[in-house]
Image 1: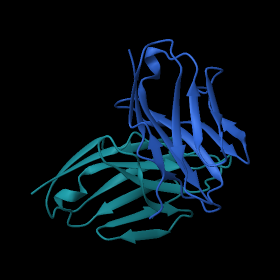
Image 2: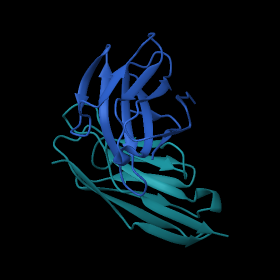
Image 3: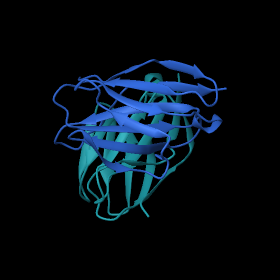
Length: 110
Length: 112
C-alpha cells in the first residue's frame, strides 16, 4: 500500500535558523513526489515536483531533494512568512491520485 | 498563476440533507479531482474525473457521493444524505497533461 510519513509533526524555528523537513514514502512505481504549502483554512499551494533520486528543485529559501526512499525540504534562513504546514504527496503508478502525508507544521518566530 | 475557484466557501447543513459543492476549474485543464481533509487529518483522495467520466475513486466515495460537469465548465460534488462524519474541508484540484495538481481554496462543510 502506498504510504507517506512526514517528520517532525511540528517544528519551531527562530528567524534565520535553517532546518529540514523529512518525507518518507513507500509507493509502487513513483510517478512524482510533490511538495505543497498549506496555510490555515486554505487549499494546498503547489511548490515542487520531483521525479527521480538525486533530483533537486529550489525556490527562494526552499530546496527540495529526493532519494529512493525519502525527500527533504530544506529551509534556509526562514522568515516568519514561511510559517505554514508543508505537505508531501506521492503519485504512484495506479492512476493520478495523490497520497498525502500528515504534514509538518512550521512556525518561524521573529 | 492559474486559479481554481470553489463555492460556497462554507456550507452548514443538517444531517440527512443533500449538499452540492461547486468548482470552477482552470480552463483547458483535463483532469479533475476531489479531495477532503477532516480537521487535523491528512488530505484524502475521493475521486478523479476525466473526459466526462469517473476514472478512479476511493473507498470513501460510496453511493452517497456523485460528481458531474453539469454545463461543461463547472464541476460539482454531490453528497446525497450527509452524515456527521462528512464534516470536512473539500478541495477541488485540476491538472493538465503535466503532473502538477492545482488546488482550490476549499469548501468547509459542517454537518449538524
